Image 1 (tube, rainbow, N blue to C red):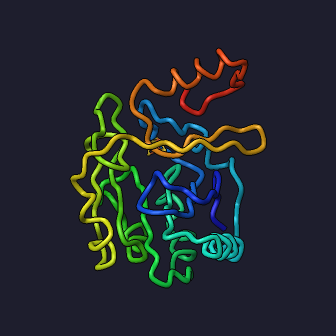
Image 2: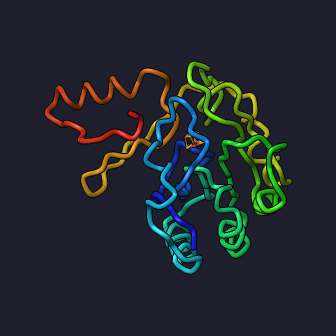
Length: 208
Ligand code: SF4
């Protein structure tokens, strides 16, 4: 079982093309300024079996996705379950991008095993105040590292690519999801703009 926060597609702001996004539930790294505090509690979220995740993947493939992005939360805190899933995904030329708050040198054997099924990884904690500037990353310390020949082909051109932040907005079941890496200061502005239009958040994942 992989405990997840949410699974969405198509995602277009966390990796190239249209992707299935899986947000893993649970993170103990507690980066100051994290916009996804709702993913911290390892007891929250929804446990999904590998079979269920594979069905979601097949459904996304039928809808035309180009790849899979695994984010969180901290995916490597469920390394064994994630390896089991990634080892069985029929990718058929599609790539896997993984986000982790860890640096590569911090990983144990079980966590490194996950990377054996990943084409590119974005590493490092979110550091508030360090403006990103680089595509798909939240702060300038985070590195995009291609790990396979496919990863080299698809991700090498983006390693040092500066980019304006892209954010997707999704509404599901009364919840508003912002998918991507918003620039610093944008979230309170979004909240104010919505409040001015009569939409008030009961909670926001970026507030302590
Ligand atoms: S930014 Fe990522 S690694 Fe850091 S606390 Fe938030 S979910 Fe965890």
